[in-house]
Length: 70
Image 1 (tube, rainbow, N blue to C red):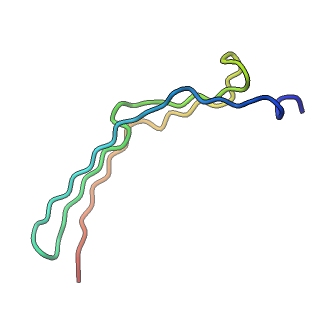
Image 2 (image 1 turned 90 degrees about the vertical axis):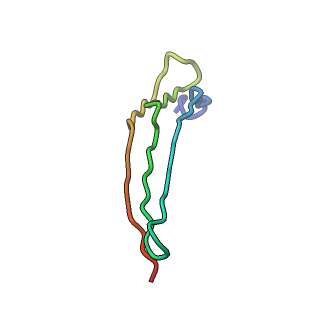
């Protein structure tokens, strides 16, 4: 296949993530994380920008949790 011999490129990509944790006491910690706060997507193409082969949008994601030490 000719496409297999062509170079694959990805547009510049960056995302902003943040995390925080709080120790309730010696045993318990609360955690929170935000991933891709800038809601960035990723674009991949073959050889020239007009030949887009992949577009990914994961969106902003949030996670919260609690850790316990025993």
